[in-house]
Length: 381
Image 1 (spheres, rainbow, N blue to C red):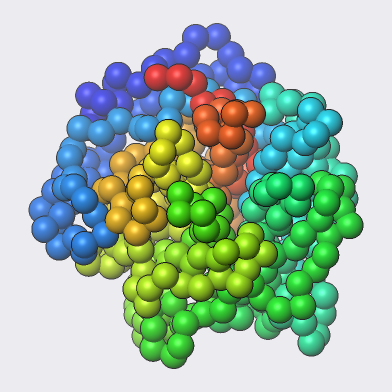
Image 2 (image 1 turned 30 degrees about the vertical axis):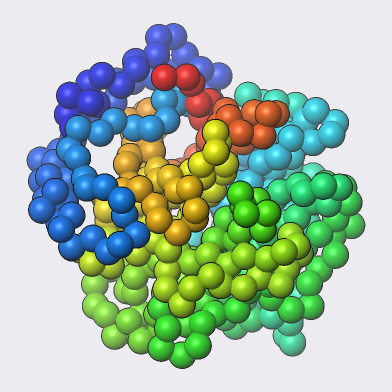
């Protein structure tokens, strides 16, 4: 693994915002965690089609562009890009006021749109797209997790809302529009509900990932976990986050879950390993997923998996490394204790609709000491 990191391309010169530095070696702790996974592989469920290896290098070859969207007085998260008919890049992102702290996304996030002439340019905020609607609505207290897609002539804005400022009312919804500038038709009901009490997904539905399936249906991947585990488990992260799949004959739904079981499940691995923040795309006949690692390798990397049918996935490999493997920044205040991670990874595909060209994500830090959008160019290997 260390040799693989030494072989990572080292870029010369500087990007628009940052000078590159050589990726660091794994610490002894990281190396032991990864080595131990070889023994843990025998505990894998049927979702995985091959065993672990210890000589992986990151799937994406990345060059940092920089913190491309930062707003004074706000945390920024969930940056979903799309090419506009005007040739610009439109970014749908979530934000909440700085005084709410990092946890403010649960009770005060709103979804906005920004624009840039290209992924190499800084984004400018344009408008609030979806805001919490208040008491009596399923998205009363937050609007979060935007994912923008276009199917035919319609723009689909998948998102998560909740009604009580807590995780147990998180629900995936779908707003629609004929243009990126709106008006957006807001749903009266969520698009996808949790499972029945006691099921693996009885707590919520969140983190939507959408793709058109090879079966002619529309696939919606979602994250959830079990409420009882969430209430009773001890440790820094309670509950085990898994991914399910629902399908529909129309992009607008209704979506029906393909199984009572998750399609991605790390719960048989040590240390309560799990994943979140999935983004899915189709390329050369198979489906790819990039997601945030939550204990498979560590809590700072991204994961990459593939599938042909949406149900049986390959074993995860490293998609990208921690932020300090790509950039050097001043250490932020102690309250930004997730500094150094790239979360909510999203990909801007080439205009061919298949080839990954830019990796967008959210990361703590920046001049306003909150969190910002960060963009990488994806280079060919």
